[in-house]
Length: 474
Image (cartoon, rainbow, N blue to C red; front, side, top):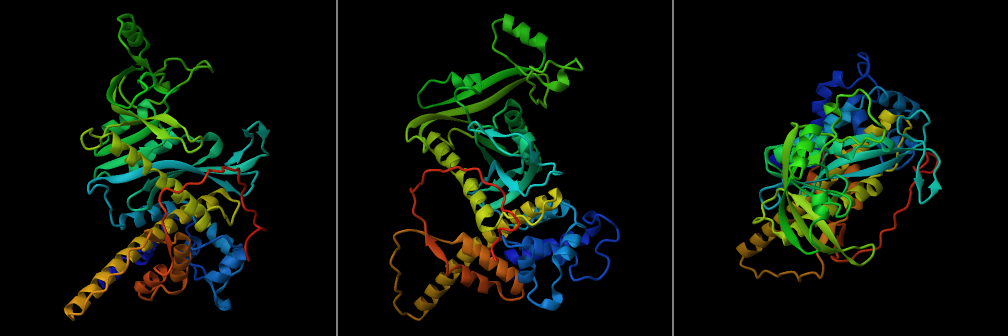
């Protein structure tokens, strides 16, 4: 009984029940979801979670096989428009609280923060319209695009948090600071970020955040001056950078021959208006500060050119626990968030939307993040269940004093196919929720694929438009 209470499906239904208990927070009008209907609050949330890449009528047909229970697409849209965005934001947070923690090195929560763009259906009234955009000298027509800033738990394969922004006015550093402020602080954590996130304010925030460690890849030539001055050799150095927001302090220390960096913080400036050429930086701390971090420089192979290039990571991790070789391995693990974006978009239908309205589109993005977590937890649970079953069988054979026949080792390790796991999880969630969860595990284990390490294909990045409503699978 205890095992069933902990599975991913029961946890999702429990979280939906928790959300339903506070329905006043999520309905737009007091009278919404008070009358009996074919699509009450809880069922509506489940339908939105389980949507795929079909047309809206096809989605409703799958969700309600019985014709007497099915509603029209218009009725569904009217019910959906009674919901507000916080319902899925809070559902993601509540569901993650029930997830088992998996620690890196038995000690750290391992997070990655990165962003991904979502092309949404064209809506001239949208707040996400990108009016002008030029790539490779070619002007693109206006389109709608949302930038999702996402925090991902690498060890547990779970999306932890998300901040959605318009693509033409995104601020990844501000979004990262917001997610860092909301992340759990019970266990020590390591946050891995790519180039573009490096800033004095973000590094100092992490330096002062309890139980927080970071690994940030920084630019080697046009970023921090102290990084640009590092020698072209593998090195591991401690760096301290004095900073100030006071121009008088800056000039005083410079005239004394000291090295100091001037931060143009907007809130420190006395003038009401500034020159348009003045570049401002966010700074949330006192006027004078010394920022300390460790810089690790090493050679890597660039997959785009095949040549060796120098890369630098800044961190506050201990040198004895994380030497240079281990820092390389640790940063390489950041790539898992990139592959998760691929699975979430193309296996779970994260590029297929069923509305042009901004709020409905954002709710669907959150719904895909939640279902990704459900599928990931099911995969991990199925693998644990398989191991437990194998050990129980082995023990039973040993108890009968019969010889144990060991299976031949396979050439490659095998993992459950994520795409088939999405299909099986959705069907179980829709039709078989009252059946033993072991039935789902047995089905997932039938779809395994070999993992061939070391293979890589050339990245072919293309501009992708939103999938139009009329071009959906039957």
